[in-house]
Length: 454
Image (cartoon, rainbow, N blue to C red; front, side, top):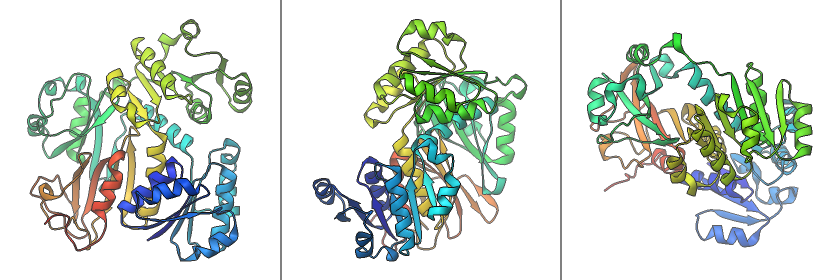
């Protein structure tokens, strides 16, 4: 498959790396020749230094011969125009990154008028994941696969204390025909192994047949004692804070936004209903205490600075806020996040790249996919006859550390696989993958008769 990526920023490079992992032909276009030269020495791609808004550039590329164009430059207007030009010149599919809330309010019209097939918005994606996380925390909704025959559920170890301080291999014996896919520990999703010990305050993600998961849910989820989300404080009134406040207020949650910029506060007040907008510095502890921080059910840090987000999130945890979520863009902070004990940390780059990749690959093999705490993805694929991973025991497939083959639907029969299980043509396969390992997973899922091991 041929894909043109316009914009060699962090998102453009991440998408390019993931697509190359799936054995696609990628052309990366940017006006920065020096940057492209550096990237070209590291990746096997065609790098073109040019302004993709110029029709001659797209014509010279023969853009109609490409399957997809992905426009992720630094401005919405450029992305919209480039996608529109590419479609007019015959490119089958065009994807644009659009972030401005003014554009998002008329996004359906923009898509139709400019003939754009798919739009990604990093801030909206982060907002959606936080909203989904809070919804799941307070409703215990299950993720469903294989047409309802397989389900994924999540619960805290305090709901099943018998598993605390036990290893996964011992827990599996208790969970008939179910698999512990992941553990959320102090805000970080980890993939457990047979010797991994489950600790107090861990959250477990378990997959299995619907009947077995339903029985487990009776034990670990007391619907009659389910907490209710009443009050949420959001620090940072940028695009993410705006989108999230709107979503929460629409389901009758009391929301407070603290924003340091006075003009931005005015904008938020004009564009949000039933949301209290406060002008102030959220690092001022007196302000937070005056605004009843200790009464909040959830505390979200969504400023433009990772350091501030982490510091404020730590402070909120020390005040005993039940759910604390931080927006963090730097991967280097992953270990720090785990030590701080934040409930969830989201990287907008990983989430947006995953959304784009799933749209491109979706028509080919992916039935459905869903993000888990913004750090991992669980997807259902159909095994193609040319995939390298077929007819090989799972234990012999070089799966990345962050990937688990979770369940197989073979002709309506659900299989929770062991190391000796082999995938067969037309199996519906449920796979759990950390977002950081998506490019490696793409490489494994690509078609080809050459084996990945000798």
